[in-house]
Length: 60
Image 1 (cartoon, rainbow, N blue to C red):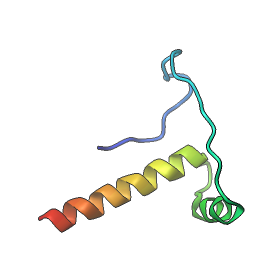
Image 2: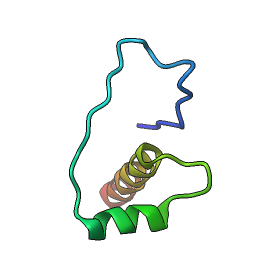
Image 3: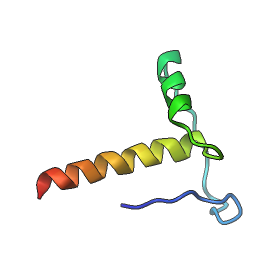
């Protein structure tokens, strides 16, 4: 699965947002991993993609 940064202009009007609670420690960790111009959603998707890639490499 590959998901890039989505521009708000092209998102479906049906898309909705939700909130999740994380500890201060995790929030700090996400902030540290954030790249310039990235949203927290972008960071989470990037980490998921990296984990998926690692799993696929292990399956080979």
